[in-house]
Length: 157
Image 1 (tube, rainbow, N blue to C red):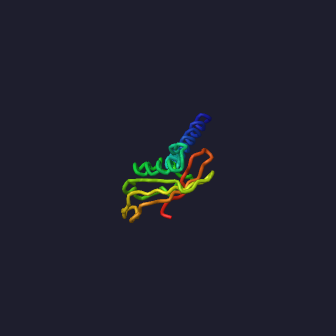
Image 2: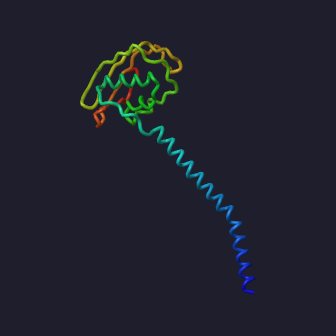
Image 3: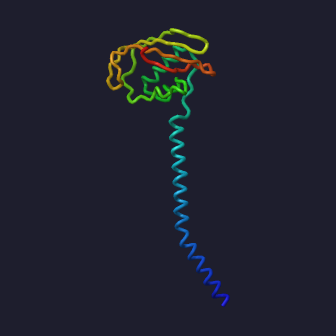
């Protein structure tokens, strides 16, 4: 009788395992999807807001002209690298527009930690970028602890 009871008990355990196994597989699959999905979301977030190119330590005017250069070649990471981290959203443009030509920039003010640069360029008339008869921008910069000048604001005014 002992042998029959052992076989019945083993069959019962196989039945329980067989019934529970699909649930465990489904749970494991959902966990795997969540882990992979979370990893992809993290990677996308960090690739968009992650490391930017390092810009050179240079004068406020040279920094501003380098930023215009990055904009002209539509290099978003390089253009954003010229901004203070808190102000990079100013580069979230929906349209790049026409390149800036006939660019001339000059220093208007400078202290130990801030500077102003005035830039003129060929008149921009581009409805896609909402620029109409725009031919100058004032650019404001701060000096980072690294010595680099970083843009905090720009525009007409």
